Structure formats: structure tokens, C-alpha cells
Image 1 (cartoon, protein in one colour):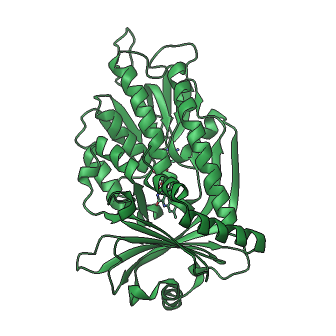
Image 2 (spheres, helix red, strand yellow):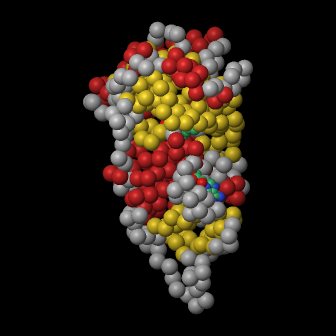
Image 3 (cartoon, helix red, strand yellow):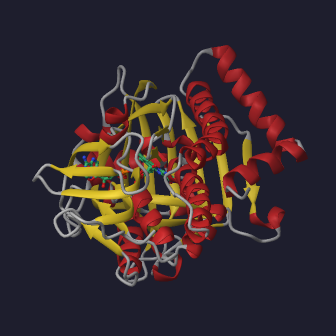
Length: 409
Ligand SMILES: Cc1cc2nc3c(=O)[nH]c(=O)nc-3n(C[C@H](O)[C@H](O)[C@H](O)COP(=O)(O)OP(=O)(O)OC[C@H]3O[C@@H](n4cnc5c(N)ncnc54)[C@H](O)[C@@H]3O)c2cc1C
């Protein structure tokens, strides 16, 4: 909606936007590209300078087939320089010989997803953002307060920065991560707990090619995932490792020396990878679950991790967030082109109604998987093995899991 010039208009000091996005992480930047491509005036505010490296930039993300389609629509996918398809998935449970495999040959040769470096994703998003004249990346800038003028029409929601700057919009979108300041300000009740676990991540080079295969191996000490990456600049074969270690009663891999860490890593890798060596630093991320009971308030809405932060056991956190962005972008886009209020309560309620059931289901599934695969308690371990055997043998169950992994709705 174009800014109206009224008598006493202070838009020179308080710039006006169609929508303001709080948080320029992978979700906030993607949404800025989606909405910006519609010709909207968007401000995307982040407390970090664009060239700053955050710990999460060292990670990789498994982008599902469904998320890739959204990134294509946002004009971001074309800017990604390196991605590796996940063609096959192997799931193992401890020393059990039962192997659950999902093969691309079972899904008409399609990839289940793609592994992309978070730093590459962010770079591609910033590049795309630079081509959209209506989008402004406001960073570094910390959001410190909001003002919602009740009963008013469009342009009655304000974001206030800690340096005193004040921006107005029709709609404020909280994409500020699982500790979301926006969510706290909205005073939304949350369901949350900490898992007694942390994800230790690093990148490794290995002697032999990974054949575009992802491995999830459930050990009593925690799930160990190996995700195939594109070959390095000198042709070295690379994979990304995510070891979800249980904290109780064991020494953290973060406390090991580099050489002991490499020995521990190599012991977890299947022999066919050959020699394995660490390239780049390791980092640890404490794991928790958080789900907002409501996503909306007048002229305010939550998306992605600000609405739901889940365990990375199934690599679905951002993929789920992309589904929020897709839904919100389509609703806002339709209202914008019809000249309607993009921050109306009716629109926000439709968004919440469409997104909460899907998010709740994924929260429940990932939490259930974490509990099932985090225990050595014999009945649970038996259930897990029977479950893997059933899924391995049963066509409809296999197809269900493959569809979920691909994230194609
Ligand atoms: C180990 C691990 C592996 C994972 N692997 C996968 C995977 O393979 N696939 C997948 O789909 N998901 C995965 N995830 C989940 C995924 O990383 C997250 O869902 C995703 O990064 C969330 O993005 P976001 O933009 O919503 O939040 P964030 O990345 O947390 O971004 C929030 C942004 O808001 C900014 N911000 C916060 N407060 C303010 C403020 N007051 N003012 C201004 N700016 C502010 C921050 O600086 C930050 O840039 C993984 C997670 C972990 C921990």
C-alpha cells in the first residue's frame, strides 16, 4: 500500500513500509524477497551487521523439495552456487543390522532434498534482496519496542529501535528466532522445554565419495547424522556432521582435543568413506522446543522459529518455517494486489488457522522421535526396532515418510 501524505505527515523521520520484518535470519530474508518481488515496500531489520558471521552460519541446512520450490519463487535458488542433492537416506539403530533405506529410485529419481551451507544461503538471499528496489535491509539495528495504535487503519503499527528510530507499517512480522523479542512483546503463551542434549556440528573431508547419501545413525549416546555436501574447491569430498549428544553422564565432544575429536568422528563413520578429517571449526547448539500458543496479535504475526523452534532430529525446522512464509506471502500478496489491508485481523486469523495444525503435527512428531531415539529403555528400544522394520517393509509407511522428507505438500 503506498504511503499516504497527510497534513503533519512525519514519514521523513518515521519511514513508512507496507510490512516490517523483525529478524533477518534465513526466514526473515526469504520473506523479504518473497514480498519484495510483489513490489511491496518492505523493511527487514536485524541486530547483526550483514557481514558478521553468526555460529549458525557454520552449519548446513537440508532444504526439502517443497522448500526449494519456495526459494525458486523468491528468486533465491538461482543465486545459490553450491548444493548437494540427497539422493538416498539410510537410517540405522545402534549395532542392529536393521537398515531403513529411502532410495531416489523409489520416487522417480527425484532428490529428497539438498544440502546447502547456511552462509551460502544467506549470501544468495542478500544478493537477491539487492535486486529488489522496494526492500530495505536495516542492519545492524536492534528492535527494542513496538507501538500498535488500536482501532486505527493501515500504517498504525510501529517498530522502535534501541537508537530511537521509529518505522511505521501496516503489518509487523516477527521472524526473530526462537528467543523472539517480538513474541515476548506480544505476550503470547508458549509451550517450551529444554532437551538435555546439544548438537555438535562440523564439516569433514573424506577419502571416498559419499554417493549423495545421507545417514542418520541412532546411538545410545545420541543420533549421528552425516549429510552429503558438494565437493570442495580442490575436489575434496565433504560431508557435514551433526552429532546430537546427550549431556547426562558423558564427556562432551566439545571438550575433546582436535585429534581425539577426529578419532571419535572416524569411529562413527561407515568404513566406505575411507579416511576422515575435520575441516573448519566445530560448534555446539543447545537443543530445546518452543511453540507459541498463538501466532497473531493486532497487526503483528509470528513466523518460523519465532513461532515454533523444534529439535533438528529430522532436519525440518527451517523447512517448516518456509511453509509459514509461503502461506503468509500468498495471503498478503492477494490482499496487496486487491488494494486491501494486509494487516487485517481476518487475514492474520486465516494465516494462523492454516499454519498451526501443520506446525503442531511436526512439533509432536519430532518430539516423539527425540524421545523414542534418546532412550536405551528396553521396551522403547524394541518398539523402535520393530517400527524401523515395519517402515522398511510396508509400502504405504515408506511412501508416507518419503513424502514427509521431501516436504512436498
Ligand atoms: C544443529 C541444527 C541443525 C539444523 N538443521 C536443519 C536442517 O537441516 N533443515 C532445516 O530445515 N532446519 C534445520 N535446523 C533449524 C534451522 O536452523 C532453523 O529453523 C532456522 O535457522 C530458523 O531461522 P529463523 O530465521 O526463523 O531464525 P534465526 O536464524 O534465529 O534468525 C533470527 C534473526 O533475528 C535477529 N534478531 C533477534 N532479535 C532481534 C531484535 N530484537 N532486533 C533485530 N533483530 C533481531 C537475529 O540476529 C537473527 O538474525 C537446524 C537447527 C540446528 C540447531
